[in-house]
Image (cartoon, rainbow, N blue to C red):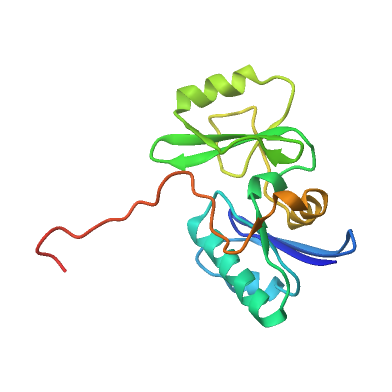
Length: 193
């Protein structure tokens, strides 16, 4: 089975091509979230996509590209939480900036999320972090206020690995980004167009 895995949910883009459980090639690049050109330059073959949570735009670009590749190549399409591809360890935690003065917390056990990410205040996330002493905690955001948390980004190689080891847990089409909260839609004031 051939796989092409990619993730654009953070400020590091990542893509990997694999064949029969062997990584044939992988590439990471700065993902400035304004231009998708580096992603399309790195794009090459089959299809497992990181679904976030993370950058709304980056995740949607990755899903749209995966759908386009599915249509043009006839390959299967699957997605998995980007959080699962942050570490090759089986058990770890991930925190991140959820905006609006909140943070998310997720526990990964057996290489898969145990629940949906929880939204917590800074005080609550500090308490959660201080209560965890036996497993690592990672983030893909710049969060200097949490000194014990290690910076790590999703890896397309790990998306491939997760697809091989847990194919029953892959999301199938139609794929959608993993949102931390309901989408917020700004409506115009009455009388404005």
